[in-house]
Every structure is written in C-alpha cells, then in structure tokens.
Image (cartoon, rainbow, N blue to C red; front, side, top):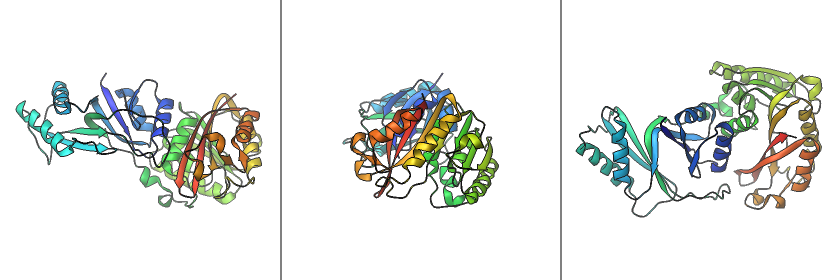
Length: 366
C-alpha cells in the first residue's frame, strides 16, 4: 500500500495531530502540521477532517539535501504516465539556500532527461513539492519540533468546503456560531467511530451540521425555542448538502437531559453559553457542572465528552494551572468534571482573537 502525506491547514497544528490520533491508528508525524500514513487512513482523514490543506498520494518525504535527485528518482519509479508539471512551495520560515523556483526547475530538468514530457499549463500529472520548515508559534502554543523536510507527491485532496459552511452561509444565522473547522474537530473527538452524538446547547446547530456531514445520528436540544427551530432548519440544509446523518432537535434544559432523551449517547459536544469575559465571572459555572452530570446520566460506558470553556487570553502560553474559567481555578474546574463522572484526557487552548480565548476539554466517562 502506497504512503500518503497529509498536510494540515496550519491554523492549529496541535489540534490537527490530536484529531488525527483519534481517527487513525498508525501514522508518523513529520512536521507540526504534517504526517505520513497509508492511503486508506489518508482517505479516512479526507472524509472526516476540516483541518487538512492537502493530501499527496502516492507521496513521500526526503531531506532537504539532494532533494532534487531524491524526488526525481522516487517519482520516476512510480511509472505514472503522461505529461508532468512540477509545483514547489514552502510552509514555515524561509531557509537559506532553498528556492522553490530552483527546486521545481531542477526536478523538471531531471524528468526531461529521463524522457518525460513537461507541460506547465495543462499537465496530466502535477508533482507537488512542499518544504515543511519551522513555523511561527505566536498564535497557539506547540511544543512539537522537527527538522525541516520536503514532502512530495501527487495532490489527491486540496481541502474541504468548510468556508462555505460558515455561519453567514447557513439558512439560520447568528454571529455566535462556532467556526466549522473547530466544530468538525469537536464532533470527531466526541465520536471518532461514529454513532450517536448529543449537543445539549445546540444553539444555531454548528456541531449538529458537522455531525450530519460525518454521517452521525445527531441529537440536539436547547432551552430557547428560536434556536430549536433554527437548528432544525440548518440541519436540513446540511442534509441537502449531502450529509448522510440524521437529526432530532428538541426543546429542553441541558440540566434535565434524562427527561428529554433516552440515550445512551456515544459522544457529547457542546459550547455552553457564556459572555466574552466569562472566565472572570462565576456566572455559568453551575450550568457547566449541571450539564456535565446530566450528560453522564445518558452516556454509554465509553462515551467521549468535548466542550469549550472561556479562558483568559493572557494564559494561552502559561501552564494550565495558572488559568481560571468562570471565576474558578483549574483545579476547581477539573474537580467538577471528576465529580460528574468524567476523566479529562486532553486540554487544548484556542485563541479566537486578542480578547477572547477558549480551552477545549476532551474527557471520557469514568
């Protein structure tokens, strides 16, 4: 089976790796936002992830030294017929001595010497060459480092249509809606193997939309009737866009889930309501505690729970114990999860903009 190189979008490299680890079993991380896996697993990521910018398959990885010779020989060994165009690019900081133009020209020259036809305007095959260098970590913290490498291969995927699923493009629109990339990651962590998903704060239905597009059985509830009606409209829109999942949206409190739903659910994904500076105020903490307990009451034995809590933007790069949310220390937050029957297994800070940040929490039922 051929290798594939999966290149993440770069928005949040750590989330890209965390999501991949939930969806596929065997892969090698070669860069903060790039990995190598087999073709089957690459196709699974293509079908589920919104954090991918490109997939090269067949493809591979070489060192910068002798990249022209290594890539030329590897491509020729594939015996792919037809004319070829070589396109080279770079992700990350500039590296002295690397020129995308020179690399593309050098590989093209080697292919011509081997008898291959080059066509830069209408090729049968496009050979992508992608330098993966060190990236700036000013947006989100990331401890993963790797030496620069060069990925190469045939582009089989160049990103999904997440931009067309942003809130203004949906039938029911509110500015509070989650970014589709983040919503898709949350539902993937909540239900990596599919199954029944519940969002007890469905709002405008951003998480439900992504669950439907992944083929899940989706349930959502909200205390506000306009949100229930709007989510139903957006969920139907997701099915019209090709989503194979089903949905049921009901009116009710996130504190009384056992009265609304029978369960059991395989995964929970939700973004509880809170104000911009909710990390400072205790308002909302009791709602979070109550919803955690309510989710546990309708969860199956191995359920996942993924949620977002407000986080001080200044604490993005600080140890998690230094942060607060809903006016509570991290130890108090984690204790609320534990006493509600959930074990936190991952936490990931997410900067939204200068004055707003969130902490993504992934927990499993104890």
